[in-house]
Length: 497
Image (cartoon, rainbow, N blue to C red):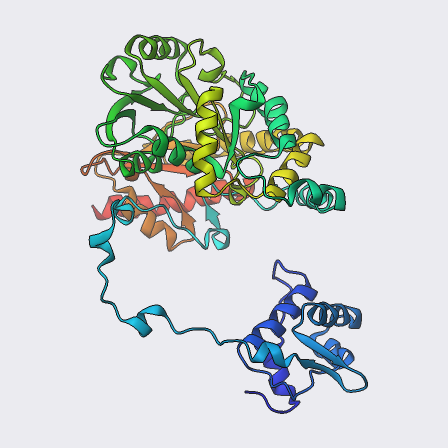
């Protein structure tokens, strides 16, 4: 524990970085709070003066003054006249952090034996925590910081923090959603897909996966049969199986899911008709009509995931929900590919009766998604920021997709690609004998990140020669050199084989 005002001690405690996403004031507060809670500053020891600390950190004195004042307001520090700032003794007398539970109680409980669902045994997600540091991140589902509408998003968050706005969203909304957000989804997002819904037919979720989990929890159990595309969305497959359902894989070709191969005794059909996950092939008009007709004939429910459909396509298609006349289509959407995946905001559009049941279920899970986020997004939509962002992203991604297709044709001509209008990825099939998992490992050593395709198939003997390349997080100028690096790695692996 520090016991004297030593320059080396303060230099070690108060370190800030210009590369941090936090403001200088926030970094100073975080450093002081961490030092206090870790018992590194004694109550009897004054902190450096604002002037001295500002000089040491190379920041304005006012920045330190504001940081100290906020910590006084929060009760971490006490200001003593003519003596300086000290740690509040009450903070130091609070209970220390408890030891890990396993250290205190041992490891005598077999939690795996007690669990009722085997979530940890489902296929793991792709984890690329440091993707942003990669030179060539051809990964799906992330965002490009250079395209993020930082100023507009900050404006909407500031507006959401106005006193009158706080009164609207700070209360417990129980099972309701922000009415302004519902109105904006109804008026701004859904018509783009040809969907016109009443407010009681829309519910907000924490992303598309939360929507699918709620639907599976409400509608599925042991004995339920769910037909879905193969290859298909792996997390949807796992969600349905966690609910006890039997997943029936259905082949996909260049027109989408092969409707004629869907068994009549399936209860639900999960599809990604706008852009198939992961091949990006759109479901043809004839297959759409056949799917809706078969669902009505066999008393089946269609769960439609609007996968990668938020952007402007060269050949846009309406959602299945927009041409559904029997009320059998449940539409799931999100804002992950436009605003940000970390925001975790999605929605379900379905009959009012089903939405009412989903609201009752959601109340027991989390009551409602954070209302402050809902209001900020509602303001973002209402001010036209999202429409402008969609146009900007659509243009940028179209350029990137074209550059990627050209580079693949030049450097990996033996790979067959499925390129469809719109979307944020392409699907590649490599030559016989190519293992995209091994290729991904070797490419990562050269700062090229790709996504092996085996995880999308519902088989222990899934083909290994497929991969998905995303374009949402890689800069245009990095695409061609990234594919050149990938081709060099693939060429060495082919030569070695």
